[in-house]
Image 1 (cartoon, rainbow, N blue to C red):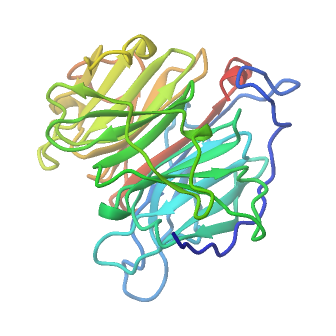
Image 2 (tube, rainbow, N blue to C red; image 1 turned 30 degrees about the horizontal axis):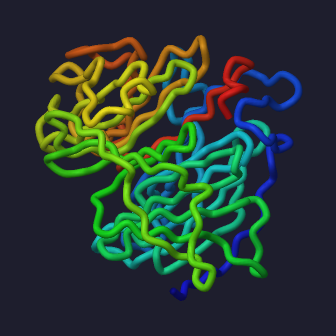
Length: 359
């Protein structure tokens, strides 16, 4: 199967690559808590000027929770985001709403010492029209791209994303059929992807990083090893997995119109749940007090001392909750983004010495 590859400039590696996921980079790191928020608007003023599509809370865990830095990437409207400290970059897909010109590329913004971003590389393919999830596995040095676009749907694996050039094939292409997918998280050689629709759940894909493909065109068909059903899940979107706490959080969009009907489903001791056919949330954050209306993505502070989880809500809010919250609780902090745009994705750079083993 033919595909096109325009450009992918090498990204700077944050630390020396390790051969096993459990190994740590040498030395200590400063405490960091930066929240990157992706906004989907593009040329909304109709004057040909692109909207700012990444905004940053440089001290996301502080008493004053604000978006105090802005960046304009090359994406035509922001979509899903990924941050990993060993890539030292923000990877952003385009939102690609139905009424806009398709932007079939993924863009790299390099993270500088103080968290500022500078535009770098891009990679493009006709298959990247509806990217709904990104994940990275350091041990295999693989970037996973979840694309949910009818018969183009699939999971594309970019090997050694820091060293891709035009002289070798840039990815493996696993076609999944018309699976309704959103979000991505990777752990222990398993890729977790949300299953959308009334019978919602989580697709579990096994061993994707090492799975072979056809030599001629780098393609193969791929089916999930199993689906973990979630009772009453109606419209699942973004997810986050915290290996420090062995906790997965996933957003449920609800009816998308009524305040308080959105939900954050939290699964504690998640690793022990994945062998079965169904999973039940340990806690659910929902109700009128939560202000959750269209929750589309979630991020968890993975530090041992981390207190918060963050939610992007398409009703133009970014919310901060306590990691321990449950039920109909008020958010710890709220940023209203009416004048900024619609937040659709999050990437959290939250590090200290306790987080080193998990990256």
